[in-house]
Length: 325
Image (cartoon, rainbow, N blue to C red; front, top):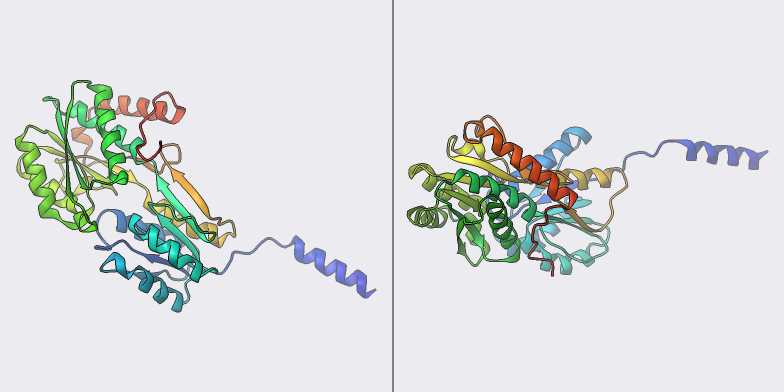
């Protein structure tokens, strides 16, 4: 009798739907402003969407330098974090050292890879989105001269630059792309004056559209474009509204989705470590079109962009990824 009762109870338990895991999510931001209208703010928005859907709170740590990474992780763990999203490529090396010290914490690294059993690495196909941005720049520049201002000359930023040039040449083979980088440390991502100086130089050399791939340094690029009556392209988040009439489009990099999906997977008990890559097919990258840039983008240009997007997803158009050999 007791055995039959135990079997019945076990069957009843197994028949119950799986409950959501109790997690305590946390975000360790990139160095710089949390509300940067760019990378960090995207992470914040993804965390806030998860918070609205699941309830509870999201812990945060805002470092003043990359060297504070381990300190930040320790602080979040002390506060009870179970899932930590680290936002920034420069956290890859310290995370390899720190993750084994916290084997019960699920880490998600944004924009780089760290090979550890408790780390999910989310990277993006920036080159695919940059190809579309380059197409639009090429179409919008009658002179055939456009520019790219990046923060640092590293593979991650080169993915943007190379995709941008390939996209421009797809619609205008004779296009000339002026390329400059602001600095050689992460400080280059928060140097608006440096961005402005390079943008002005490119405009003086004939650039009519400048793609800004430089974090909050973008603000200086946008200012130069506005003052000199040229066009600019934003990056990461939708920056079209920062200078209406100046921002041709923004290349979206959906950090918000990466953060939200990681926390959701942990809550649904489906979180797994390893590499995840988000491109056009996954809506991880793309261009922003809205009321702010509608007057700047011709209907025919949109048709060409949409056609190229479909061809990239199908494999008909192959965009170079400089990080793959």
